[in-house]
Image (cartoon, rainbow, N blue to C red; front, side, top):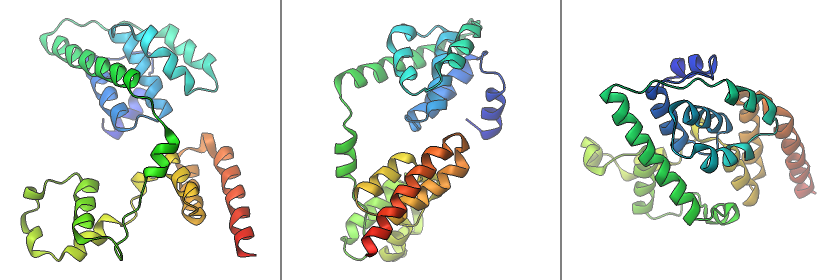
Length: 222
C-alpha cells in the first residue's frame, strides 16, 4: 500500500473497499507485529465479511491494544462493503485463502520469542565465509542470483558489505530486544531512539528502555 493511500485510510477507519482489504492483508503479512495494521486488518475483516473474523482474529487484535474502548467504537461503526463485481469476488476469495492459512499456521505453530532472539545471528564481514555473506545479501535484498546481471563482475567483498549496511527500515522493537539479548546495548539504544521519532505514542516506553540500557552501559564501564 502506498504511503498516501495509507494516510487516507487512517482518516476513515470505518469504511473499506475490497482493494483496501487486500492491500492491508498484504501489509500485515509483511509487518505482523504492527498494532495499527492488526487493527485495520480486523476492521476490514468485518467490513468485507471475512469468515469467522470475530471468533478467529478479533481476540488476537485485542492483545495488541492497551486502550480497547476506541477500537471497539470504530469496530461498531464499520460499514459493510458491497462485494458484487467479479474482481471483488476474486479478491475476496484470495483474502479468505490467506486468512485461512494465517489462522491454520498460527494454530499449529507456537511462536517462541526467546527462541527467535537466541537464533538471531549477525553476519560478520570479517569472519563469515564469502558464500554466507553473499547469501545474506541476496536474502536481505530479496534478490534472485540470476537477476543480478553484472554481479559476477563485482567482488564478493563489495556485495558482502552491502548486506551488512544499516537499514533504518529494519529498525523494529523486536530487533532492539535482539540487540539487548546479545548484550549490544549501544545498538539497542540507537534503535530505540529512532523508534521514538517513528512511534511517538510509545516514546515513554522507549525512553525508559533507553535509560535502563544506558545504566547497563555505564555499569559495564566500571
